[in-house]
Length: 321
Image 1 (tube, rainbow, N blue to C red):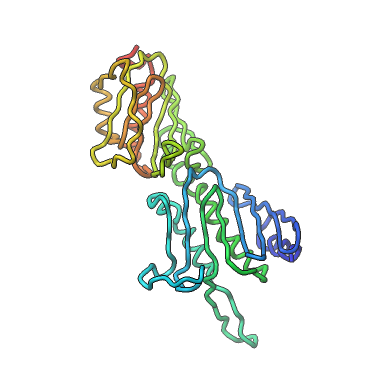
Image 2 (cartoon, helix red, strand yellow):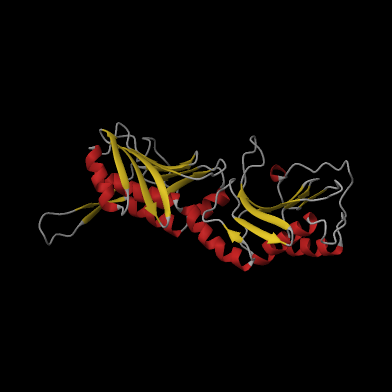
């Protein structure tokens, strides 16, 4: 079965390299939209398709089809969404992750073609609700409790998993349009809690924009857009500003005021009014400006970048030359 599955993968995915490791077990590298994805497929005893992801900072997402007995043998209420039940530890990030392409791929993977007898017979589409889709532990996976004997169905699940896994690339494509208007260098994919999504140079200051969830290992996580820069030549003054509507569970650790509080000069005040961040933290050696959720407002993000550079650059005319 492993070699048959390799043949199906080679046929369905141009440029794929698949290797059979045993009966029904395959490792594959698959190119998609300029990136390469590593995948593992197991046809039994429990069918499973796994595609590796970049860093997702503890994000978890589970998708179960709404058939009452389909996934785990236990009944579910009939009041759930018509298509599938979504379980997640970050509603904002789940909304970003499940874009049109991801939802379309999931819906398409649910149906199995069953051809009728005769050349002119209408093809029937049967619903297969046995698969559970997950995003967790830096992986996208699709699994079912029983073996899967069809190599084509395994390939169907691989298509859906790949399009879920490719969301960071699609996100980066959208983000790059915003990044270019700010004069920055965008990343080719968004890593949640990983490498910066955008780097911007302002005079002698490097400002980075990151997408993150967790403030520390014990933090349950909340989607954030963070603008940060390293301070040069500061006198150690610090500053902490928290938006009134930011829940306390999302507050960053306060800055240490032992060396005094950084005054807010007129330009900084104007930029703060334009950016309207959720939290602003100026520590002795860095500046961090955070927004709740995924920010795609050019004016607000641009103001935050200018503010981070203003507070970080000792030659910019700020209060800490």
